[in-house]
Length: 228
Image (cartoon, rainbow, N blue to C red; front, side, top):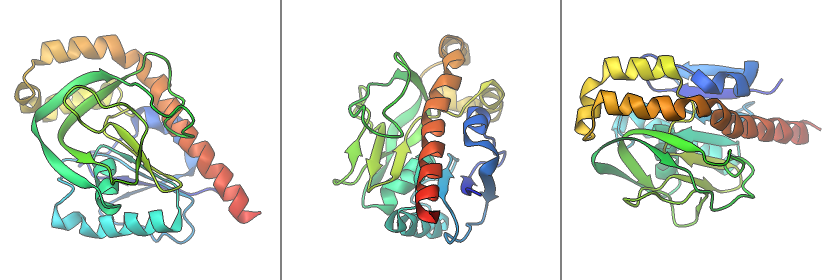
């Protein structure tokens, strides 16, 4: 059976809108890293840590080995920052926290995972850090105002996105309750942020299904080819 390792970094991990497209083949890990042997794919989600935290160095090395082995990898927020770090990119602290919905403009519609998103899609950013992809990466999404890298592909089958397509309403409610200062530090208010949520959150299921569904299909196809 196809095996996708899901790496969580939050104290209260969740799958949200990613649960359905990833399906029952996912195996969940927090605070440990599985052996790459026998894995067909990896999804690494966000967290409160900085990608340059020495405690995450083993995960950076593990991701680098996965990319070298061409194990399909999808990183979200911190997961994308770790992928950038593992493949020769850079991590950076943003000038201020960033809590915003931004439109997604596809630069490479042929990309098998990040290329097929719904028209008019907006992505939720809830970030303190960002990344610069390595020079050999392909940026799949245009950068919004401010020059932040949004989404990239590196190697044959590794992707990273800075935003949070997996977030659903319960997860967002938990973030507002757990990190109320984040909204203020981003220069907005919870009222304004929730107003934007109300406009864009109903479309998140489609965005999450497009990204995680495409990744899961690619993992299955690769696994069938490898096991044939």
